[in-house]
Length: 372
Ligand code: NAD
Image 1 (cartoon, rainbow, N blue to C red):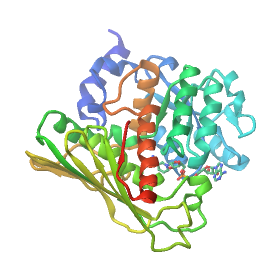
Image 2 (image 1 turned 180 degrees about the horizontal axis):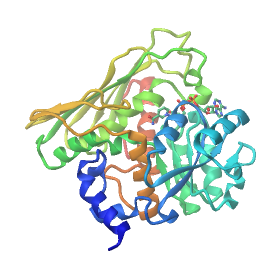
Image 3 (image 1 turned 180 degrees about the vertical axis):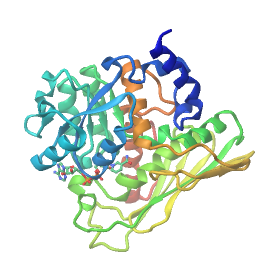
Image 4 (image 1 turned 120 degrees about the vertical axis):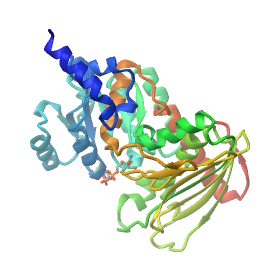
């Protein structure tokens, strides 16, 4: 008898009962869940030890295939705290001046960039040049041009570039996508995406165009953009948009407070979306087809994600998004696994092209064709 195999078989049998099991493939794939040695584990350094970086680090403590192995930060006291809290070796700690040296560190496979938006482009280029895989937070860049440069740099360096689209691994979201793919909603006619919250401190980087690249659209409206694409299941071919601003002191030139935008899809469906930094209780996706509907509310928060369809409530279990995301990304990077909805740099460039177009049509008032 092989006790390890016995344990893995039991684990496989019980996989149906664990919340994120449906996201993984056949039970034999469980064999690589950290039980077959370090080569099956993605060793990640987090860059940017702020609020979301901490959430990811905490979630990674429950990962089976991804391990927090290093940090990159400009604040020595944070590095010390993280070393203690997460047991990170001194040799895996870097600052923003010396992190190119990560290329000589065989114990780091990938860097997860979780800094303010405007810093993503330079960081991804440097990490790619150091020969490490990159996971980058959304929005991947400030515009499509930057995004394309990042994709090209990672391709040239032969490293993977993934983006922190955690909803692409969320079970209720995936259930709606499955139902749509199997025709249970019929022909898709309409999508509504409402994404917003009332932002506080006027001095934070999210309200500084130089660091954020814009306003609500870059930060929260991107969920409605990305969601419209994965819920309708097509790439939009036109966009219209309208911007409104009630507080030009808090939301300075180039920092959008509220934008409503519409996307047209080749199959005839239309999306109507709202992005705002000035209203709470806005996190809702609604997909309407000729034979039924699917609704998520909340749709993109940290969960539990709740929803229903014309058939009744969605009942997929709550998972910690960042734990599942990092385990799944380890599978993508280490085993070439494919996500149901892609999470690569090219996927992010499509969202950035739409963002570029929305900002443009807010100025021109015209309808713009999209070529993604
Ligand atoms: P944050 O302000 O809490 O953290 C940002 C970190 O970057 C801080 O540790 C800060 O010290 C560091 N930093 C490095 N250089 C900086 C500079 N020049 N100016 C300011 N800070 C600097 O922000 P956050 O909420 O963690 O967001 C970071 C990124 O993560 C953003 O791109 C954001 O869109 C993304 N995010 C994603 C999700 C998600 O659910 N996927 C959620 C929150 C944030």
